[in-house]
Image 1 (tube, rainbow, N blue to C red):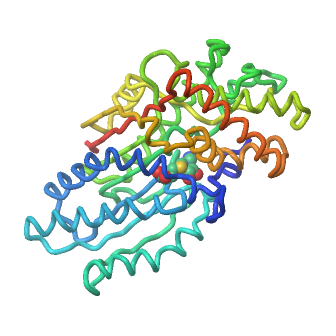
Image 2 (image 1 turned 120 degrees about the vertical axis):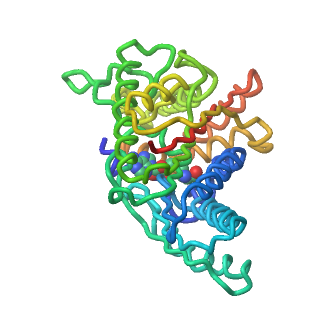
Image 3 (image 1 turned 180 degrees about the vertical axis):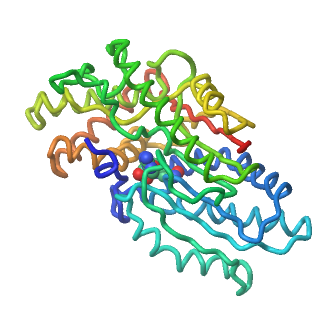
Length: 362
Ligand code: SAH
């Protein structure tokens, strides 16, 4: 499956769009906003620039995209004023895969500028926003052209489904699962881990050329607690999706063979795995690495549905393409999924774990 061509969050502003179903990501990013903004303040004290260049990698579409940009702009301006520097201009690079709904993001810009102007009683910051489609597992920007890179809830997506998951006949060696599960063999774990290593290394190397020396990156991504791959954190959500797909297969709605070959382009690294990649790539100093979890209360009252709509906005494009199913089957899939999440939550909470990394370009 060609991730670059097919993978995308559901665009637009409809009921199953990413724009309408990404409040959990927003909540989580807000929990660590202080770290993001303190990093920026520190950076402003270290460098003096006329144009502050920022990139958001995996920006998606919807209110999350511009909300963080607004906070970043305000923090930089505030810090510059404190140290009696004039306001810089801003060059904002919004990146995502070319399949992303950039049109929605661009359409939201006039309101975004209006809001910034209103808060400044008519004066607007000099802010120039552009879209930069392409995979962040490769170069996106010219050498030394960025001061600050932000990426939230994007880097747990691999560049592709690990090819080593398929044998010479093209059959998956992880049949019956769509990610690493308790039934997965060591070969499966190795396939995912190797793809993560390759991807994260490429990501760091590409960014190291684009960031100025001293520039910072704040990366927020899903991960796992320890060496164990199977836990009630991230892997369990895939386990439940796998079970929901199996229900559709048993009802004959989707083909069993197609389910056998379905795997996700996802990996939840551990703290040690992230640290090791940063160390081996060598261009960055890891200033900070924190772990945090959103709680059951954050999901609101209807926890299963909240998780289901979030996962649907993320996975629908891939599932539709792979299984060739329509709206009705997808509705059914995610109704089952929501119910299973609720049933499991009653037994024991399932809490996704997130890392925030602050990296400084050496
Ligand atoms: N940052 C937003 C969106 C997170 S969703 C938020 O916090 O709400 C993850 C986004 O990463 C998706 O829009 C997806 O298309 C994008 N993405 C995944 N892999 C990518 C890649 N290789 N290059 C660029 N964007 C990618």
